[in-house]
Length: 75
Length: 166
Image: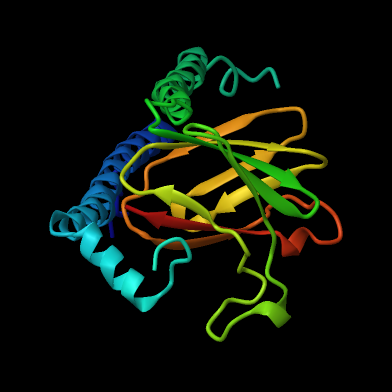
């Protein structure tokens, strides 16, 4: 029976190959996470503030608080 | 340590020294710019001095006349139902909303710190030094804070109460 001849494995440049793969993956992943954070956290928070203040009436809020009697300087 | 397989990766060494340094500089420059921007004081409408003592605050409204008063904590026996223990004061500092307010903060004796967490304010009151902070409040109401620098026996009993009204 002829002995099986396996293909010669890669002998050199293993670290370089690993570094290339992992550096590229880390770069893409970090950009992706940053983009997700911007959309899912930062922009969402800014929108929540903008939505709150769009129709916010400080005077109405103040009048309600004044009638509730929480202020000392205005009754 | 002289095997040629483990010496002389000069290009890689250079890259992974210079590149992180460049990245850090690119992060630092805008960051420093923003840091100095947080210290800018842009046309305040109103300036109030806050002076820390052991163990009360003095507020001076000197823009339009000379109103000066002390703000002592209300002892628990003097509280009304619904008042907050260790947080209420006899004279609250009254401030306007929707106007840039500049607070000048110092101390008469030891270190104190003038704080109102819900307004994002904390500034140390240092004797012999005048610190300033600025804020523009958007919502009216009553805001509470407590002295944030250990200043003696009654450090926990010198709160700050700000009434923000239009």
